[in-house]
Length: 316
Image 1 (tube, one colour):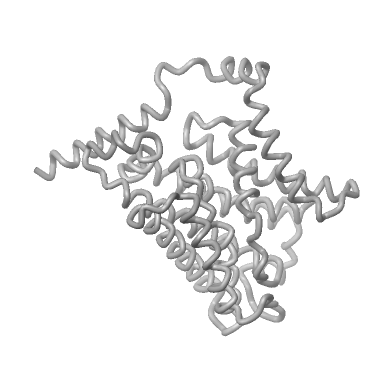
Image 2 (tube, rainbow, N blue to C red; image 1 turned 180 degrees about the vertical axis):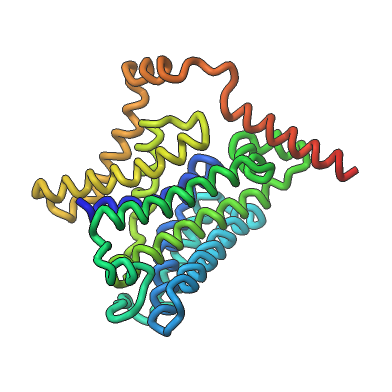
């Protein structure tokens, strides 16, 4: 169970990236299946060649961001459907990842990783390591909350909520889309780098079906905490990632075939999508939150528009 909690918190980094595209930008980005492996491959090959783990992990984030930029350019400048743009980048990354790794699997035996100090101190695999990883994820969550509260972050939210309206205030929505895709895939690739170091190897197939894991984390968290505010939504994403790993752990402990995990993941996503539609859950949500005067989408658009208009006025 300790290992499950550690993995759940590590995958929460990826889930935060999926949240940025799926919930904030309202963009179905399938690049993550490829950029996750890219992060693991880049970090593994650099660590094997003697690069410090911190620098290797940062390089993995940069590689993931570049993958997101490519998807963004295909969508905004190439006018390719967003779903297809992500698929094209994901397919191309399969070959690129093989080129980076040189083979389908890269072991990290007898190499120092970010988790080596925890292992040497005897902390890895205990509640101490869970608390350390949790602290890092919380810091990352607070950075996301802060970023989305800035004028730039509000402009990104407005782009996802009402692209035409925010464009009328002079915001370049193409740039907002490319930036968000870059940030999202940087998170995903960073998670891939962390997972490869945690499990001790990078594999070419480690990212297959990852988008389902990310969506399950976001949707489960949304079903529990809602998405009225960014603060609650990002908490939900982290909790959803941990709950997803716990459910998988319990399913395997109950004797289910590991080959059925993708099916179980699909069932979890379907359940998380259907639960909020049930009348009892809706009444609970209304009783807890109350009926808002205006939707969060409208508020985000109005706030971002006001910030952009104010900035434009100062520029004049």
